[in-house]
Image 1 (cartoon, one colour):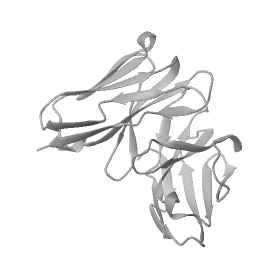
Image 2 (spheres, one colour; image 1 turned 90 degrees about the vertical axis):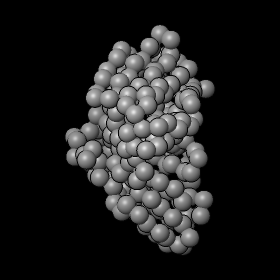
Image 3 (tube, helix red, strand yellow; image 1 turned 60 degrees about the vertical axis):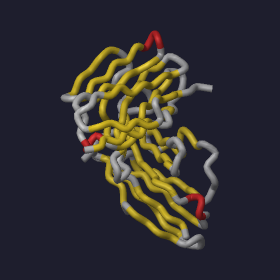
Image 4 (cartoon, chains in turn red, yellow; image 1 turned 90 degrees about the horizontal axis):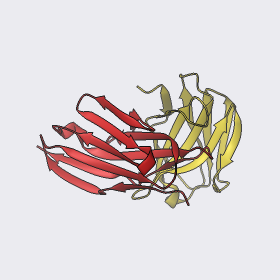
Length: 109
Length: 113
């Protein structure tokens, strides 16, 4: 079946470090989003990026649709960046959005 | 503030109780969703509504009953739940069921005792 896989599952970094989170998907997508789930449970939209590159402050994302992966970059990490990062893909043939299992990021002061 | 509001944020209910979760979106979207997030599990899609019609039901037990009275409101009625139903229930909306950004509410933490 259609799959969305994220790596690494867990990442522990010191404040100020940079990080790269990866999302692999098994089929062509027409919708790829990155979310940050804060400690209170809310999923915050970071990027809608079915292809190309976008940047928002210290965060940027790149999706290479032909190679079926997306990367989320976090530079100069802050403790408030801690939480779980999810990618989610919607495939052109279905309405269902498939979520990856997430990367749990812990930024230590 | 994402434009999707869920109430209550926290709910503790007994297995014989009947309760409801409410979701309201102020974004003018046509599609609304219920997701369940249990500890150490990926998000599970429960229901999808498009223009108030249910378009997807992912084999969810009948003790969960959705209701979509209009395109801005979505309810999840809960009846005779089990302790394993304790989870974070997330409501979301998008402009349509295909191809658009999805926005989530803050979630409702449900504990069944």
